[in-house]
Image (cartoon, rainbow, N blue to C red; front, side, top):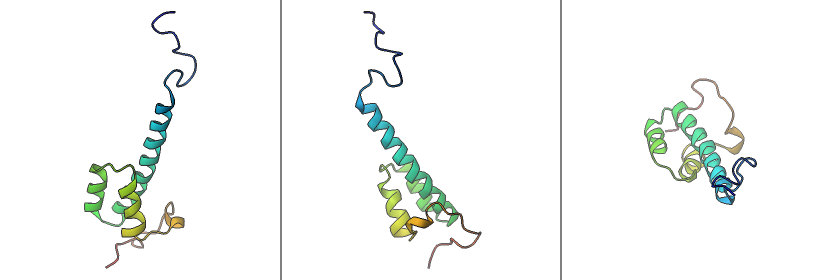
Length: 90
């Protein structure tokens, strides 16, 4: 058995369940961060954009922003509105 035995036996061979969990966390974070940054930018809320870009909370801050601050409904998450329809509320 050489030093590299076990490598090359398929994707993720020998790496354990930790890598799969890490992949899921990264995918979860990128999904929510992408949505939140996109909505913050479209709404002209640049401070929220900067905060969410810098602070990593595994999607928690982004979810709070989308549903509590921006008031977006779940069915509106992936919809594209016409220009001017998604401005911040006063």
